Length: 114
Length: 115
Image 1 (spheres, rainbow over the protein chains, first blue to last red):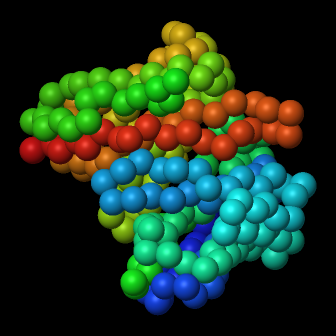
Image 2 (tube, one colour; image 1 turned 120 degrees about the horizontal axis):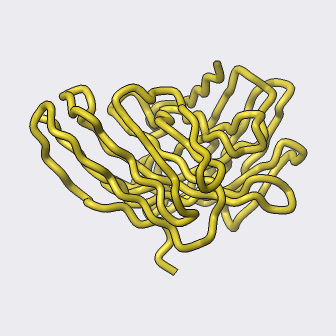
Image 3 (tube, each protein chain N blue to C red; image 1 turned 90 degrees about the horizontal axis):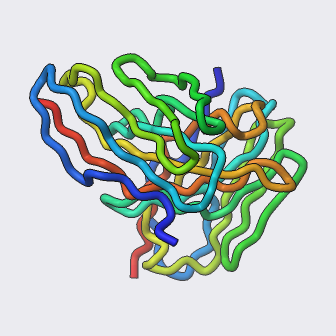
């Protein structure tokens, strides 16, 4: 059974800092890995999707990497802003072509201090 | 496009009552799924569907039924509500692209309380 772990559980940093969120998974036979953002009381917004054949994806100030062999992914946020405050979730798909749902970590609660 | 629409947004039930959580997507996505989110447990997969007429169980299927008669709709039925089913329920959809499954699109959730 796939297990996904996110470290740290919570993080508070001053505005402007670069930061790294970590995600590890136990079964390397994943189809893809996704990073989501969740604001309080809201649904999930997809940030980045990394297919199993890829090593990284970038969108604006966000960069996500994937190392299947070590079972790790990282989300790098550059020049953090107060608007980045949210809970960040990573999720691994199964080997069933991505059609059989995702296994989520419990998230990192991020606070960016103005 | 509305994306993934979930109704109702809030619901309070009594133990033993039944109800259906509605989920509809207008993006013609093949894949749809239901998750529940509980404090300290994260999101867990309840049921999923890879197309109309095809459904399968996820990690926590007990007490829930699903059906998928159309591509657009994927309702979740609680047969006999229990306090342990108090949770926030999310519906999601995705499609099969050239490089594989796309990113998941989530609805805004249904907040369900069972008394």
